Amino acid sequence: GNSVTQMEGPVTLSEEAFLTINCTYTATGYPSLFWYVQYPGEGLQLLLKATKADDKGSNKGFEATYRKETTSFHLEKGSVQVSDSAVYFCALLNAGNNRKLIWGLGTSLAVNP
Amino acid sequence: GAVVSQHPSRVICKSGTSVKIECRSLDFQATTMFWYRQFPKQSLMLMATSNEGSKATYEQGVEKDKFLINHASLTLSTLTVTSAHPEDSSFYICSVGRGGAYSGQFFGPGTRLTVL
Image (cartoon, rainbow over all chains, first blue to last red; front, side):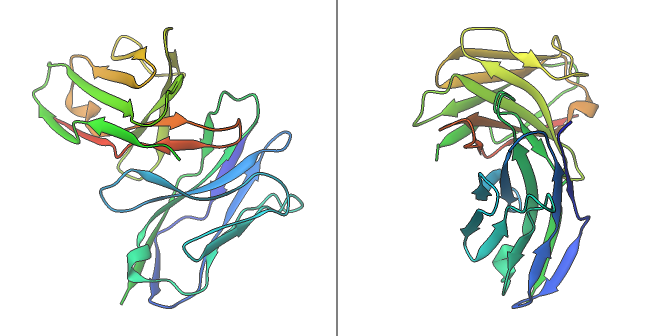
């Protein structure tokens, strides 16, 4: 079946530090992969996505590359800011799954000034 | 993307009462909407898929009679928590799928339900 595994949080970093949040998946076929972000007290927002192998999604300084050989979609940012403090969710979508997303458990990130 | 609203943003009710949460797709006609419940330790649980003009599809373990979903139009889906109890207190989020099959979902801001 389909599943998503994220590194457990919480992750605490100082401002301007490098961020990596690991995400691996299992899926049949060729899923699309997503990172969503949830800021405190808010709903989820799509951060970035990749729809095929070797695609790189990027937004707001965040990047993630769809690696089929390692079934991974790790989220990275070179220099985090306090405003990046949020919960980050990795998710996959497989064709024929009626648009149902398969979610990771989320990783909480706290960035200190 | 898609703009999705939810109403109310917060609701407090007494145990035994029913609460209705609305989800609106403001700029897109959505044949499918999704309802999630988010637990305190962040994880998202898909409750049901709301289909316009037909019955919702519930996930395993979700009580249909407890969580009534109505998707009467292409822009509105409602979730009614019937006979609410304190254990129903949670953050409820709706989303719509838009674009091609691989385009993912766009989320409403969520509704915080507190049952006293």
